[in-house]
Image (tube, rainbow, N blue to C red; front, side):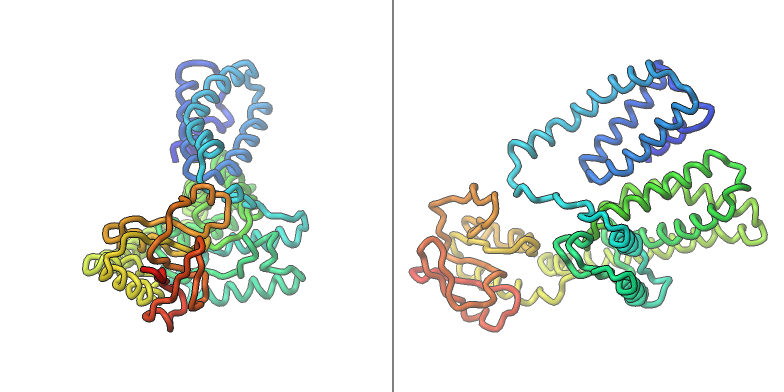
Length: 408
């Protein structure tokens, strides 16, 4: 929001760039905000690039001083570099994640129909809400039908991360990265349509230009970023950009259609209050369950897998083992295991790692027990020439299995 606040000043038609204390302070503030935004989510660079290009066009049109702009850039870029340098160096020199982590975030095709379907998938991801009955079902059905009509393979790896099946989250999902997204996306859509209808008649020129600019930024982001089940976390900065646009368009709606516009603000306030209430109830449920049993609280949204996790952890707590190996997959739900077993197990390490981080394996580490969600329940497991057998309590499990070393 800090970046947007100052960007609107710089983008104004009457503004002129000068190399003075005030302008330098504004540009440094924007640069620092952008740098921290990048550290939080590198996806902000897509929107920042479009906004920077639009500002450059505005500067050329206003005939701003090229010398002043160059001096400002030379002052701001080193400050941003200092903020980004430690994280960049850590990723390049000391990162423990594999090389392919974070890659393939953009669409892998130039086919316009595939890009269109990818954009619709991303745009629709935040539409399911309590205001639209069973919206997670019929919206997804429409998109699947549209992809079929366009002869686009909706789960193709070029428009779906690792080829994951397309799905929408349920309504009233109040995770940190999507708590109010449904309200924002609904009002953005309505305001975008209103802005097109009123484009020539709107009096607030800066508001009109900003509205169209950030609408393009958001839709461009939806088109070029590959769909994935957690794409909403990349959208958080863009939801922030849309909020001033919604205010501009609602202001124009209130002024030009007062008979109906007077109800717009109370409607927004009502929907926000409903969302805040739902958010409170949602997280109160997590806090209540976690208060009774902290471990159970981790499974508020994964209750189906709780029994097996709890069963395995109880078994290990009663055995007081000295070492535990974790043979898990890419997206395994492992944090609860660390949280519960860290005190009762002497050492916990990942084993049988099959990516670049395997270089951190400890050759001398041969655990007494191994927890796995990768074996499919096979009766025996071999690790470092040692034989492990499936513990009896896990014979009927379908997700998580525990193995014990034979000589233990």
